[in-house]
Image (cartoon, rainbow, N blue to C red):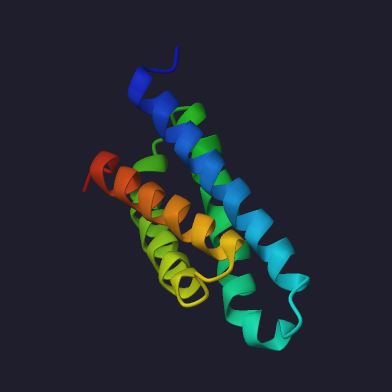
Length: 111
């Protein structure tokens, strides 16, 4: 059975993945899409690693812990990029979700 901290982590990872996917889609609708390419790319990378880590945590994989370090790093990079566009609600919300996810992953990852 999934412990409470694992359940919280899985929810955080899934929330971050959803925020990143939404941000990427919304960025594609912006007038100057070319300006948003780095943001979109990081959104997609972040969403993908968050989904992967959530799956590994849910099945108690031995690889989850060390991938949480990578996930935190990618979440931080995504948050930093989205913060450059924080005047857009989708980027602001994504940055917030990414920062929170990075914090949770860093706290729960075992060296």
